[in-house]
Length: 345
Image (cartoon, rainbow, N blue to C red):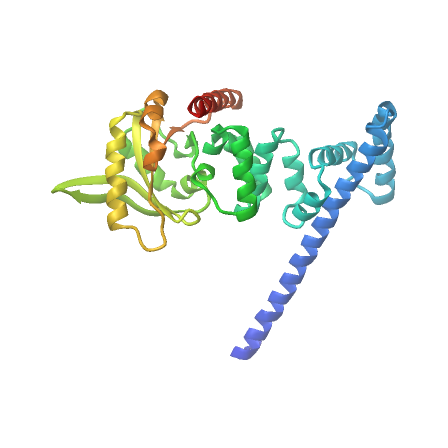
């Protein structure tokens, strides 16, 4: 093989980079054009046939269009694909927004998102795809695990959710309500039916990459069993993380049972110690996350933990059937929204 000098090696690297960037640009252009084509196709069929008192004929014409396109251009134009296009145009009815997003999201992203029925939930997933660069597999997994319903923001009144998501769209600044979840799904830990807090902590550290993926992008592991000496007494925090976008240290304490009011004082001590001894210039106040096997919602409400920078969330070590998880989350969302309405009155 020819030996290259330093200058020649740099030249070759630059050429490879140029070709790669050009291919990426071409792929992006093709994806954008394909997505826009599917949207226009869906809109045209909807406008001309399905919404025009010719619905019966419109349904039949889908088969005809599929057949003609397949004859002309080959595979990829099944009736199922045409129906995806119809749903795409119905769900995303803002042409300018589709054109803009098509430069950043693939057709597969859009196809997945069209089947998210709730508009606010769909907006949340779009923004998270953009800011965290989710691929389509990750997007599907997040939707399947009901990520939106598990975020703190989903428990707020609809008007507040819309306002915060719109602000996020404009500024791309994450808030704690978009970052923290309840419950956290830790089914990847492989724990037995009976385990200790140390077993839980050890399992998390063994699967730290998966744990951070469940926490969300932006988290970085800092320390385990962080020691704090206060008035001659030694305290230990289970896990300490840092969130890059929030610019905050995040103290996590693991609890096996139900939430107890006493946990608040303990976490406040940790947070004030970290604030005094570990914060650096440019960071915001640390946040505490109490991960409990079960919440005590009335106690949590009475303690007004948000005012202290403390969040409480449940964790589940086995992912239940989706219908059960859905019922549980919808019940939690309903409770939180009713509480918010009471506070407003």
